[in-house]
Structure formats: C-alpha cells, structure tokens
Length: 317
Ligand code: UDP
Image (tube, rainbow, N blue to C red; front, side, top):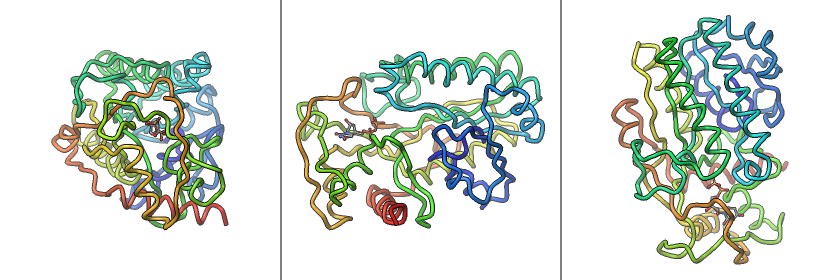
C-alpha cells in the first residue's frame, strides 16, 4: 500500500487484514502518521527512492496507490508540488510496478477529475475536465494507467472518491490532517470551541439552501470498495474506473445540522466568500460500482458524523 499511513489507506489496511490479506505499508510519513499504521509492517521510504520501492514491490502481487497530495487550494497556489508528487512520483511507481512485474493496481482518484459537471448525479462517462491542478494531476495518472494497461498489461481499478469522511467504528483511527480543511472536523472543532466559528464558504450557490452540496462517503465504505476491487482484479477481471459515493447529496447547512444533532452542541457559523474552485454540487451516480464491484455504500451521514465525533474525542485525549 503506497501511502498506507494516511487517512483512507489506514482504514483500508485494517479492512484488508480483516479479510485475511497480507499488507505492507509503504509511506514516507510526509502527510501520513506512524500511529495510523500501528500493527502493520511499515516501510518508511519515498516513492522516488526506486531501490526501496522496487525491493517492496518484489514482495507483493498487487498495489494500492493512496500516496498523493489532496488539497485543491494548495494545488492552485503550488502546482509544481502537486505535479511532482502526484504525477512525477506516480510515474516512478507505475514504471517500478511494470519492472517488478506487479500487474494489479488500485488507484485513489477523485470526483475532482470531472471539474464542474453539467449534470448531477455524475456518471463515469461525464467528460473529465478538471478545474484545478489537483484534479489535473489525478486525471494524468488515470490516463497513464489506461496506456500502461494497453501496452504492458497492467490491470487497474480507478476509484473516484467523492467526499471521504467519518472514522473507524473502533475510534482508534480517523482523519488527521494538518492543517485541517475539511468541513466535518472543522464543524466539530467549532462546536467544542476549539475554533471560534465555522465559515460557510458561500450561500449564494444555485442549490436548495444556497450552500454547496457534496456526496459524503464513509471511509470504511471506501475501504470495503478497495477489497472488492482487489479481489475482482485477482480473479482476472478487466480494468475499470468507477465512482464511489452514496448517490445522496447534503448541503453544508444540512451537514452542520447533523453535527449539532450528534454533538448536542451549537456550531457557531459565519458567512464567508465562496472558496475558489468549489463546484456548487457534486453527487455520484454510483450504480456502476454496484454493477461491477457488487459494492454499495452502507453507512449514513449520521454514522459518518457519529464516528468522526468518537474519533475526535479519542484523538484529543
Ligand atoms: N466548507 C465550508 N467551510 C469550511 C470547509 C468546507 O463551507 O470551513 C464547504 C466547502 O466549500 C465544500 C464542502 O464544505 O462545499 C466540503 O468541503 P471539504 O473541504 O470538506 O471537501 P472538498 O469538497 O473540498 O473535497
């Protein structure tokens, strides 16, 4: 697992182990955390370190690639960093996979590859026209995978995540971003007084209540999709790209209401300007994932916020 000590990777590592798979986590800990990888073999090295990477790849039959930078705003300010990490290092990984005869790869992609879609819910055939360097970097890797599949027989599953959220039900692992920029943890911090208020980025969008609508998907639902994707590829299936979402959108205000319900506290808010690069609504049509992976999101927004709240209590102890 490349980038297995991060948020989604660490949840997937546990899911893999529960299913009886052997896991090697490869992570440079630049944004990952050793604590999230506790109990797993951790190779602490960079993807650019081809010798270390090749040594790890020779020991496995499949790769899951989670290692990437994933802040839209930062990618606009520092595209060079994003292209270096997500594109250049990504190619090092792909080449090493081919050289080490690893022919199965699960890739963490994103709904950001669609840019501002014309139609909601978003199907996989929607033209991929990213509107920021983050989305562009992920689209590049998707295209590289297609080429490597055709030329070198590298079979892949591209998983286009919508808004990953929530935490493991155990309360032992969860989201740890620094700085935190995601709605649910920030709203909970505002609820506890750890920050003065939650800024709502725009309430003049063409949505029912004027705030942005997103498809929040529980991190363990994402983890489950990786398992089915891996097992499907291991059974000789073809490469495919699928959306991973619930198909249900919630506005920022609806999410805040849910946070208030779960925490029993008021979330102080302040209206703020739109955040550049935010499309009004992103909601998945996840029916293809149902068809090809036999996967469906099981956890609700309530479970997302409840598990995130439990994790926040544990993390701050
Ligand atoms: N958002 C907000 N205030 C915040 C953080 C996020 O209003 O302090 C909004 C943001 O504009 C977006 C939604 O919440 O519409 C989800 O944002 P997040 O950063 O969690 O995920 P993203 O959609 O960027 O992947």
